[in-house]
Length: 503
Image (cartoon, rainbow, N blue to C red; front, side, top):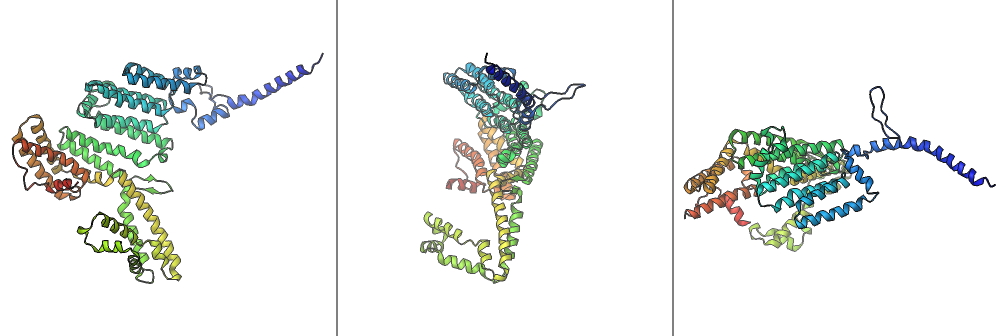
C-alpha cells in the first residue's frame, strides 16, 4: 500500500496547525478590561486597526442591524446600495414620502459610514421634500426630519467634521434664510422635542447652528483634519452666526439692550476670528487682522532697499518702463480719466501693472559690492508680499473688512435707534397700513442713518450695505406713490440712491 498520500496529508495538516499560531497572534481581537483582569490590545491587526481608526468602534456607534445587513449581503453591499438608491429616487419622483423615508433608512443601514449618504439624504429631506408641502408647518416637519437624519449620521461617523458642520449649516441656513424664516424660527424656538432641556434664550437657530460649527471645528482638530479643509471657510461660520443672530433679532423687532449685547458679542468674536492663526499651505500661517502690520513691514523694508547705492534706481527703472510702453498705452495714459473709453481704461490698467517696480529689479541694480545683501533683503520683501497676498485673499473670501465695519457700526446706540425707526415705519406701512405715520417714521429713520454714516462713512459707499438700504428706500418710494407725493429732492441718502442708479 502506497503511504505517500497519507504522509503528505499529515504534513499539510501539521503545517496548518503551525500556521494557526502566528495567525492567531496576528488576528487576536482586543479585549476590554474587567475588574480583576486587565484588558488586551489584541493582535497586530487589532492594534493597526485601532491605530489607524479603521474599526467600526473608531468610526462611531455600532448598529447591530447594520452589521447584520453587511454580513447578509455576502460582499454585495454596493449592489444593494445602488438598488436602494434607485428605489429612493423612484419614490421621490412619485412623491411617496413615507416610502422614500423608509428607503433612506435602509440605505444608511447598508452604508452607515459613508458621510456623503447622510448629507445627500439629509439635504433631500430638509430642502427638496419639505418644499413639496404648502403648509409651513409641514415644511418645518420635514426640515427637522432632515436635521434629525443628519444627527443620526454624526453618531455613526464621529470622525467626520464635515458632517457635523453640515448639521450646523442646515439649522442655520434652512431655518434662518428661508422665505418662511419668521415662522420657522418661531417653530424652532417652541420645538421642545428637538431642544430638550436647552434654555429658551439659546433656542435661536443661529446660536444652535453655531454650536455645531464649533463642534465640527473641535472634531477636525482632534482628527488632525483642519488643514485638509479650507480652514478660513470652515471656521468663519461660527463667528458669522453671531452676526446673523444679531441681524435676525433686529428684523423681528428686538432692539435696545438685547440687540446691543448681540452686536457687541458679534464684534468681539469677529475680532477674535481675525486674530486666529490659519495654516494656508507651504508652511505659511496667517492672521487676517495682520494686513496693516504686514504692509508697514513691507514699506519699511522697501525704504531700506531704496537706500542701497546707486541712488535713483527706482526712478530710472520707471522711466525705462514708460519708454517701453506701446504708443496706444502712452496715449491712453495721457488722456484725462473722465474722457477714457473702456478700451483705454483697460490699457491704462495694463500699463500700471507694467510700471510696477519689483524688489528683485531694484536689487539687481545695486552696486556689485552690496548686491548680495540687497538680494537677501528683496527675498525677505517677497516673503512678506506672499504673506500679504494670502492675508488679502483670506479677508476677501470671508468679507472680513465689511463685517468688522458692520459690527462696529451696528453696536452703536444711534444705529440701533435708526434701525428701530425704520422697523416701526415698516410695521406702520406694511401691517397697520398707516401711511402718514409710516412716512414720518421713514423720514426720521433716513435722517438718523445719514447721521450714523457721517460717523462711519466707510459703509456709506459699500455695495452690500447699500443693497440692504435700497430695500427700505424703494418701499419708501412706493409709500410716496400711494400718497401721491413726489420723492424728495433733498433726500438724506441721495448718494446711496445715485450709486445704485449707476449699477
